[in-house]
Length: 212
Image 1: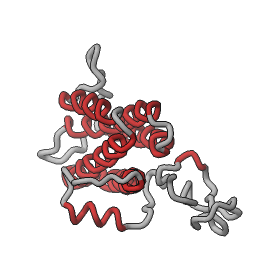
Image 2: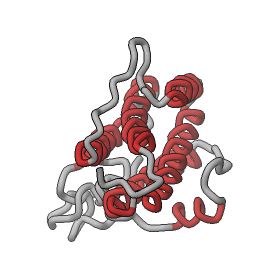
Image 3: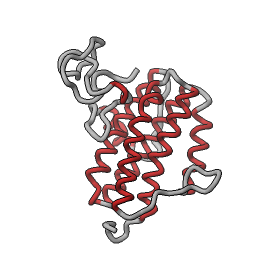
Image 4: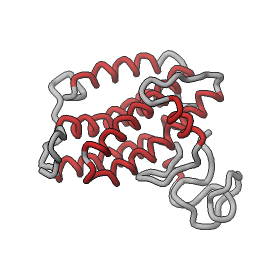
């Protein structure tokens, strides 16, 4: 194992299962709220994130978790969290968007901790954090567009606001909630503009326009 002293294998398993939780929760809430586009598009990114974490577990010689029958996760509190957030998100579009923001906030907080605890994987975790920052902005935009607000639960308010005020970030996924857009931008020129016209240049993956 490459883990430094004090690092916990359970923490890496938790990070892997958090990506599974994010994917499965997005899929389930997307069925209930098809008009909230991040729930339709981001699961593809979460699948990529899950595979990145699976690769880290493999490098560490840690077997992929096998939840007991009737459970989704071996990390005990994640089963309760998944069920609670799914129940909450089904209530309304506003509640679902707030769940999306909360999920990404907690994910970012855990990824920041992981960068300190396991610095040999700092680059991978930083890329995942950048992608989660993009997803958080997409969900928060959908939340505020529906008249909702959000109070931080895991990150300091200043850090949360900094993420909201930041531009789209490169990372393991640059989808901004639009991962299915493919390699070309949606705007004119180099695919970075916000316009509705088809992009002619080779833009960064899916960075052409904001999530609807």
